[in-house]
Each structure stands twice: as C-alpha cells, then as structure tokens.
Length: 359
Image (tube, rainbow, N blue to C red):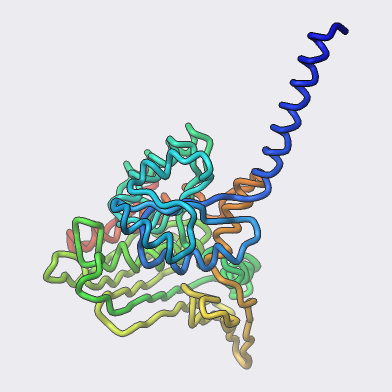
C-alpha cells in the first residue's frame, strides 16, 4: 500500500470512529425542546427531569423575552424567539407542544417536517382533517407523534386494564366518569377562537378513558348536552353513550364547579371505583383503586410514580428502542371521533349515530 493510500485509510478510520462514538452518545439519551412557556410546562419538566435519559435543551416563545425568562427560571440552555428557530436546532430530538388547542395540529406537522418527534398535549387535533394530516406527516418523515394523556401511561391504568382484559369484573355494564374544576376568567379555556370549552379541555380525558377501557370500541350512539358561557364556549357538558353490546357510559365535565373527579366501572361480577383517575402519582403518593364484590373489597395500589415521567419514558422507548407508542395516533383518532360526535350532538340537540366510516 503506497503512502497516499495509507494516509487515506487512516483518515477514513478516524472519521468513522468519531462518527461511531457520536452516534452511540446520541442513541443513549433524548434532547427535548419546549414549544411555549405555558404553565403546564412546569409539571411536565418536573416529570421529565426524573428520567436519566432525557434533558430539556431549548424553549421557544413568540417573545424572546418570555423565552429567556422561562429558560432562566427552568435552567434551560437555549431560548428562542420563534418556534421555527427551535425546530431548526439540530440538537433537539423531540418537542413537547403545549400551545393553545387550535395550534396543536399545525405545529405537530411542522415539527415532523423538521424531523422532530412530538409529544403534544391533548387534544392533538380538533378535526378529522387535522388528524389525517398529522398521521401523514408522521409517516412521511418517519417520526413518532403521540398525544399527551399522561394518565394512560401510569401503572394504575395498566392495572385497571389488566382487570378488564382478564374479565375480573365479568361483563361490563356501565362506566361513569367525571372531571370538573373552576377555571379563572382569564384562562384561555374561555376563548372559543383558541379551542376552549369543557369538551376540549376536560371531557377529552373522559372520552379517552372510556375508549381505552372499552379496548378501542366506540359507542354506536351518543347524546350530549352543554351549558354555554357568555364567551361562547361550553362551560359544561354531560353525555350518555351506548355501545353495541348494550354497555353504557356517562360523562360529566364542567369549567365552573368545584374540583371533582372520579371513575366507576360496573360489571356483572364486580365494580371498580377510581378516586383519582387523571392525576395518579402527581403528589408523590401511592395511587389506588378498589375492586368491590359481594361480601368484599380489594384495594389495588400503584407505585408513587409521576405520570409525566411515564409518558416521557414512553417517548424515550420509541426513539431509542423503536418501541410503539402507548397512545397511538389511531387511538387518538378514535378519541377525536367521539369528541366530535358529542360536539355535534350538543349543537343539534339530538342523538348522533357513529358510523365506522367516520374513522
């Protein structure tokens, strides 16, 4: 081998080795960027920082001053004055989107086009056209996108589903779920132009729970009623759902009542009561639900783990281990289909039949 060839081979080995080391380093951790400086970010970042495989490296706002203030508060290295700048950062692997509801789909798609994975707060989309576009962007750009229902990633929900799938309750007859709270007048949930209202802010949790517990099956018909606020959004919603096997469900959500939550699954042999379905582990305490049968009650306890950490770890597995999302976009499509059916029923003040072709 002449000297020129030897020099070329040495250079090739050095470059290949350097590339190999860098790739190994990047495949062991995930760098996150945050789109917005919303209040929910504090809770999300707290959960994320409990993971050994994730770091927050950037935050973006439409105002560079807000971004810098938030970055300093949360000890984040980079602050950007536009969302586009953050998406152009090659160090960012995945973005967390906590923007107003009407901006979710738009920025999911733009993030995918920038080759970023996405964890988007609920609801990920407000129309079927939006969820179609998100799924197309994810597929075309080979990125993972999923909707941020943290509770669905928590061990408590895993245990509940184990009881359902093992038919420990017998045949499911009825499911009742609620989530209500008082929102301040200046909260964006009161703004219709930003996708506000009890349905999109709260009842989406109930819809996702019912669909998940029923293992992806949607109701055949729904009837919903709403109370409207002066700002033009639904301040509360109640709904009755009927499934093809005779199983029924009831939903209650409100933006102007004291905080109230819970879920009850009633079967032919036993029923489950869940006092804290949406925020298990938030306070660092164990969460639990009860299985009640004639003559006895069993308390099932889950470990005190942050649900936001659980969804961060789910994204880590998708990126680093090629795992599938716990909440797939197909599941989100079903959640959305149910929400739109409830919205249509409330607007028309009549029962709505859900057809399979709506998916």
